[in-house]
Length: 69
Image (tube, rainbow, N blue to C red; front, side, top):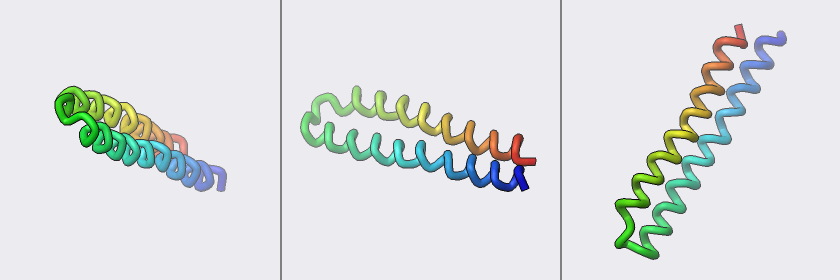
């Protein structure tokens, strides 16, 4: 029973990075609308931030598989 609860907990932990990726994309669109001349720079920063947030989600997902068994 402990493994099942841990798996659910790690699954819920991946919601944070998913929300973060959505917020990153929304703020990037807002910043691009305000200053279109820096859109290339903003895109690079957005992709780096999304990669870090996605890595946290993958760590949570992997930990749920590894420790949930």
